[in-house]
Image: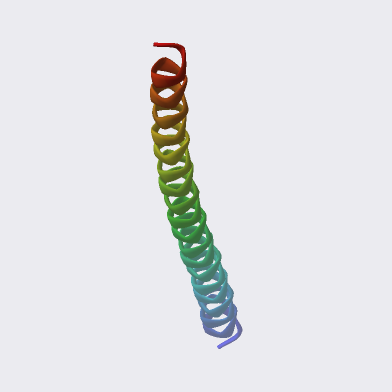
Length: 69
């Protein structure tokens, strides 16, 4: 009976470790996904700001061309 209880206990420990490991991996994936979404959002904002900066630059260049011409 002693042997059997050791096996059962070791299985329970193994199972507990496996569950904890899976939870850690799951949380890591969730965090990575959130970070990737935040990065994508910030990159989209950067692109939008760069486009507005280009439009403003073109407008000011066009105005300067009219003034000098």
